[in-house]
Length: 336
Image (cartoon, rainbow, N blue to C red; front, side):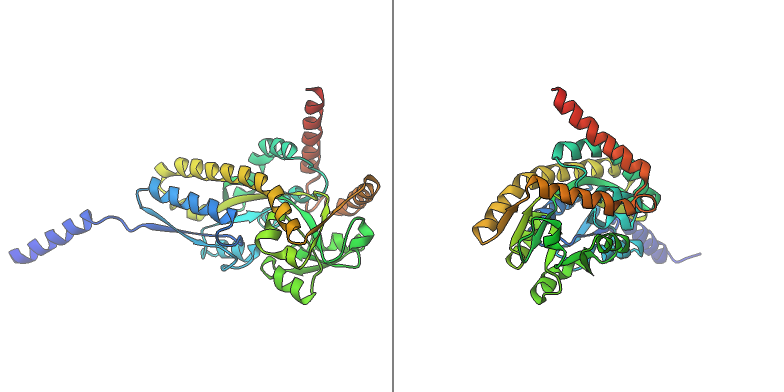
């Protein structure tokens, strides 16, 4: 028989263990967006609300400003368990599910109304494709329209051909398309754009105006082509492995919080983008209009060049569905 004092000690130890709060789960979230930018702000708001909703049982740790690497690095780190979640753009989402390359087809979606209509219809399908690869979509958003920012004026395709154009280093097929169109793409991590512009390694980037302002890229590439190239869609994604760490009773609330944070972020970004252009113009940015005949040249080049992506990278049926939805939305507007 155990001594009485030993049994008492065991009893006290068990009682303390039962009374002690469970260790908090920490969710690590990263983005290449700079600290204190609107993108960082939305993650801060979401993380804070998650912690409050969980009563402190879920903690978050944010890694902004590319300190965890380029978006390709973030995806790799999520896959190996070093990160749980990330805010990614349509430039890198195809690294998870290649079919999402359809979102990066230029000059297809032309207005926010069209984008919202397409995402309302196809968003669930995109989420299925990401989930098949082990990533849960917590919320969708957008980062603004991509525009050309260059070191010399660009209005027509031939103006861009001599320039070294930044390209996501992970998308080799996309790089090949630009090469086949007669351009000079230079693959590099997004975190090195500023350095590459400074050294002359690149002379052109296709980025949202608010990113050009936030990262100060416009100071080096101070010419903007007034032609919305493609809307850059964004998403907060979490590995399914990490999602399973979230208690079931909290998951619905967490999804609501993420969606609400991103909805607020989306409206803010859409309002801020014109202000960003105005601010850059006040500091030397030159904006160049694209006349109809030049736009027709860009469209012809895109139709011919990007058709090479259809099939293996961009499913033909998914692209056709997106084009059909855009046409449907335009028809509805014309009948109002």
